[in-house]
Image (cartoon, rainbow, N blue to C red; front, side, top):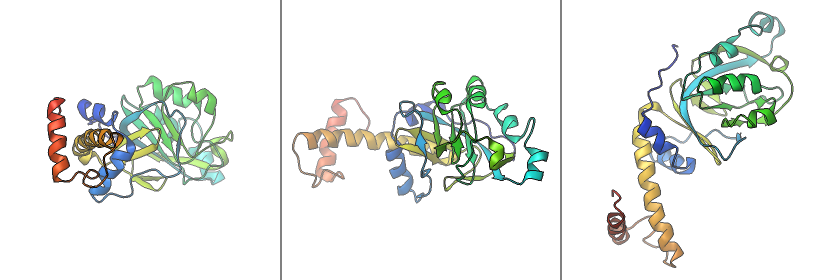
Length: 241
């Protein structure tokens, strides 16, 4: 497949950077999408948000003769990182094998210099301390000092992959926060972002009423009377319904 174009609208990216992955998960579930959260991955930098468009990289299991052919030099891993563009997220399928690194600090630095938005791997990373110092958001299954060639062959890129149980198509939207990382199909990004922002605005009202001592009945979720009150509250704050 050709490398995807970065079609995420700046205004959509800004909204996605402001809402939680928990809210996005709920919005995706309401649209019948239950398999978009990357299970078992932890944020190395929970203080950083990540929003970007997926560039995909596939590692196969190690076979020594194939690694000799495909693992050295400007292999699929290095070629992809050398073409990462601004706002793109490197997503790696490593079969959830965490017995060797899938990326380290030098390649992560190259990705950052090119404007990459972050890294997601269901394998391990090397040089974790140095990578965290790059101020680059990344999500990994583990930390392991062993080199790539101990377990993986960097096989190909920019094709559908499965990372941490999630099917990732090139060009899908990837969002990460301190709770983890989630995928939004590219065609739904604008719609889901708008709905997530609305949900969080409603939940701000609900939280205020709960803090004031009100019962959850008719409040969470909003019933007709509480929705009328919410709309008055939103109007008073100059917010859209």
